[in-house]
Image (cartoon, rainbow, N blue to C red):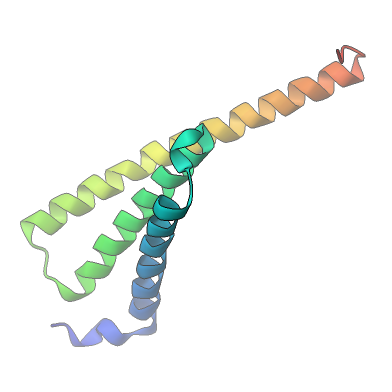
Length: 110
Protein backbone atom coordinates (compact mmCIF):
# COMPACT_ATOMS: atom_id res chain seq x y z
CA UNK A 1 0.00 0.00 0.00
CA UNK A 2 1.26 3.45 -0.82
CA UNK A 3 1.83 5.60 2.26
CA UNK A 4 1.13 8.83 0.38
CA UNK A 5 -2.57 8.13 -0.18
CA UNK A 6 -3.55 10.32 2.77
CA UNK A 7 -2.56 13.57 1.01
CA UNK A 8 -5.32 16.17 0.76
CA UNK A 9 -5.51 15.70 -3.02
CA UNK A 10 -6.10 11.97 -2.66
CA UNK A 11 -8.68 12.47 0.09
CA UNK A 12 -10.55 14.93 -2.15
CA UNK A 13 -10.28 12.53 -5.10
CA UNK A 14 -11.71 9.65 -3.07
CA UNK A 15 -14.49 11.86 -1.65
CA UNK A 16 -15.37 13.14 -5.11
CA UNK A 17 -15.40 9.60 -6.55
CA UNK A 18 -17.71 8.43 -3.75
CA UNK A 19 -20.04 11.39 -4.26
CA UNK A 20 -20.13 10.84 -8.03
CA UNK A 21 -21.13 7.21 -7.54
CA UNK A 22 -23.77 8.29 -4.99
CA UNK A 23 -25.22 10.72 -7.57
CA UNK A 24 -25.46 7.98 -10.19
CA UNK A 25 -27.12 5.58 -7.74
CA UNK A 26 -29.55 8.25 -6.47
CA UNK A 27 -30.56 9.26 -9.98
CA UNK A 28 -30.92 5.63 -11.05
CA UNK A 29 -33.20 4.88 -8.11
CA UNK A 30 -35.11 8.15 -7.71
CA UNK A 31 -35.50 9.69 -11.16
CA UNK A 32 -37.09 8.61 -14.42
CA UNK A 33 -33.94 9.66 -16.27
CA UNK A 34 -34.51 7.37 -19.26
CA UNK A 35 -37.70 9.18 -20.33
CA UNK A 36 -36.05 12.29 -21.78
CA UNK A 37 -32.99 12.92 -23.89
CA UNK A 38 -31.77 15.39 -21.24
CA UNK A 39 -32.17 12.78 -18.51
CA UNK A 40 -30.32 10.17 -20.55
CA UNK A 41 -27.51 12.64 -21.20
CA UNK A 42 -27.16 13.62 -17.53
CA UNK A 43 -27.05 9.96 -16.50
CA UNK A 44 -24.45 9.11 -19.16
CA UNK A 45 -22.38 12.18 -18.32
CA UNK A 46 -22.28 11.58 -14.59
CA UNK A 47 -21.86 7.83 -15.12
CA UNK A 48 -18.72 8.35 -17.20
CA UNK A 49 -17.39 10.87 -14.69
CA UNK A 50 -18.10 8.46 -11.83
CA UNK A 51 -16.29 5.66 -13.66
CA UNK A 52 -13.25 7.84 -14.39
CA UNK A 53 -13.08 9.21 -10.85
CA UNK A 54 -13.55 5.78 -9.25
CA UNK A 55 -10.85 4.17 -11.38
CA UNK A 56 -8.56 7.12 -10.72
CA UNK A 57 -9.18 6.79 -6.96
CA UNK A 58 -8.45 3.04 -7.12
CA UNK A 59 -5.05 3.90 -8.55
CA UNK A 60 -4.18 5.44 -5.18
CA UNK A 61 -4.19 1.94 -3.66
CA UNK A 62 -3.67 -0.47 -6.53
CA UNK A 63 -0.68 -0.84 -8.82
CA UNK A 64 -1.15 -0.53 -12.57
CA UNK A 65 -2.54 -3.98 -13.23
CA UNK A 66 -3.57 -4.74 -16.82
CA UNK A 67 -7.31 -4.82 -16.10
CA UNK A 68 -7.13 -1.46 -14.31
CA UNK A 69 -5.20 0.19 -17.13
CA UNK A 70 -7.71 -1.16 -19.69
CA UNK A 71 -10.70 -0.11 -17.57
CA UNK A 72 -9.26 3.40 -17.14
CA UNK A 73 -8.68 3.66 -20.89
CA UNK A 74 -12.27 2.64 -21.61
CA UNK A 75 -13.66 5.02 -19.01
CA UNK A 76 -11.58 7.94 -20.27
CA UNK A 77 -12.68 7.02 -23.80
CA UNK A 78 -16.23 7.84 -22.76
CA UNK A 79 -15.34 11.42 -21.84
CA UNK A 80 -15.02 12.78 -25.40
CA UNK A 81 -18.33 11.10 -26.25
CA UNK A 82 -20.32 12.70 -23.42
CA UNK A 83 -18.58 16.08 -23.82
CA UNK A 84 -19.38 16.07 -27.57
CA UNK A 85 -22.98 15.14 -26.75
CA UNK A 86 -23.14 17.99 -24.22
CA UNK A 87 -21.64 20.48 -26.70
CA UNK A 88 -24.23 19.51 -29.31
CA UNK A 89 -27.03 20.03 -26.76
CA UNK A 90 -25.64 23.47 -25.87
CA UNK A 91 -25.32 24.50 -29.53
CA UNK A 92 -28.79 23.19 -30.42
CA UNK A 93 -30.34 25.05 -27.49
CA UNK A 94 -28.50 28.26 -28.40
CA UNK A 95 -29.59 27.99 -32.07
CA UNK A 96 -33.24 27.42 -31.12
CA UNK A 97 -33.26 30.42 -28.76
CA UNK A 98 -31.41 32.59 -31.29
CA UNK A 99 -33.93 31.62 -34.00
CA UNK A 100 -36.90 32.40 -31.73
CA UNK A 101 -35.44 35.80 -30.81
CA UNK A 102 -34.93 36.60 -34.49
CA UNK A 103 -38.52 35.62 -35.27
CA UNK A 104 -39.85 37.86 -32.48
CA UNK A 105 -37.61 40.75 -33.56
CA UNK A 106 -38.91 40.48 -37.13
CA UNK A 107 -42.52 40.05 -36.09
CA UNK A 108 -42.68 36.43 -37.24
CA UNK A 109 -43.95 35.16 -33.86
CA UNK A 110 -46.96 32.97 -34.64
